[in-house]
Structures are given as C-alpha cells and as structure tokens.
Length: 307
View: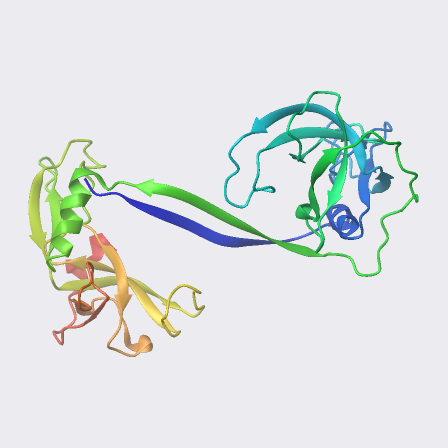
C-alpha cells in the first residue's frame, strides 16, 4: 500500500471586536486586561458576552501578570510551533485579580497545583497571545497595577492565525491501483456490480449501493467538461498565472466527473460540453492539465446527469 505525509495549511484572518482588540493590544503593551461581569466576576481571557447570562460585556479591568497554577499537564516532548522547545507544562493559571484561568505554558522542571508564576514577556510583541512567551516560577509580591482602562492609541484590529494539519495518508487498495495506473498515463476506475456506475477515482465501494467494487475499468483518456469555474485569485503554492480554469471532466466511460485544470484555450472560451484530453508533464504521475481535443462539443443530453 502507498502512503505519504501530507500537510493542509492556510492562514485564518479574523477581525476583532472591542474586547478582544483591547486584550491583545494590552499584551503588546505588557498589560493584561480582563472583563467584569454584572455580578462582579473578572474573566481572563475576556469574552464579549457573559457565558451565564449572555449579556454584552464591555467593562475592562486590568489584572496582574502574576498568578497561581490551578491545574497542569507535563509536556515532555514539545512539538512544532509550541511555545517552548524544551520540556514544559501546560497549565491553567488564575491571574491575581481574575476569577477564571488562562491556559498557557509554564517553563519549569517541576510544576504543582498552587504554584506561583508570572508572565515572561516575548522580546518582540505584536498583539497576539504569543506576546506572553510563557510563565515562569515566581515567589515575589503581586505588582501594583496602573488601573488601565483598555484605551490604546493604536489598537490591534485583526489577527492572522495559521491553521495546519499534518497527517499520513494511505490511499487503500482501490486508489493505490488508480495511482499506479496514472504513473503509466492510464486512468482506471472501478465498476459497481449492482448499479454498474464506474467510479473515477475508485473508492473501493459504491456510495450509492453500499457494495464493494473490484472490477477495474480503464476510462478516457478524453472526456467532456460538464461544468467549470474561472479562478482569479493566485494561490501561493501554485505557479499558475490567473485567470485560469478548473473544471469537472467526465472521462469517456466514467460514471462521474473528476476535476482538473483546463488549458490550451483562452479562459473565456472554456464551455460546458468541451471535449478535452490530458496533457502529461515529463516524469509526472498525473496529468498536468487538460486541453481541447478539437472534436465537436458533446451534446448536453450525453452528460446532463453528470454535471
């Protein structure tokens, strides 16, 4: 069986409301802000609505950079992008002046519930939770507060949070055969023994009938464009100039469409029913794109059930 490491990664951009904006701007300025509820509790990190009453919250209040560990878990082998490269503890820390706990890393060989800690600020701060580099053991007094109200001259209004998933993908029996055939510039699907639909790429089972598929069927190489879209936003990891076209293509003999890039024709001339064929780059294991075959367009009735 084939298997390969895969990564799904993208930046998630979000705007901030007044409460989160003040909290993150405060971290940039080495100030920790919470929000006070109508019953007097101080929530850190602050939220925009009371989790009990759902009332809107705007009363910001400064809390101390020192606090107490309420619970913790040791992390002996830090992973990529975690706060520290050496063993540390994840801990819930109730800052002095707060009624709730903040999750962060504690840089210490041993940690215990009730342990006193303080913030170690990052050398460079930009208005993010990572402005707190970590917490460290502390046995001093609680520092005096300035009584900051949360008003800043240049507040942070948005953040970009990277999202990433690392995993190992194994295609299984059916798709392993499909990938192996592609390396020979052939496209192979599997036919359902009950409904007779040919699935490309094969799935190992028919999702309609719920029965296993095993009969291999070679399809294509030519096919018909059933629908398409024009891409006008350039992807960072694709060396393709915009605009370009991605389409759903039903290969001859297949029972459903696969998707692929359509080139060799001006983007505004791509159309439903266009007959196309794969173009293989040298040494590639899959088609680089599909181009027009020069045949007349397919009649709509031949692919209307496959759009």
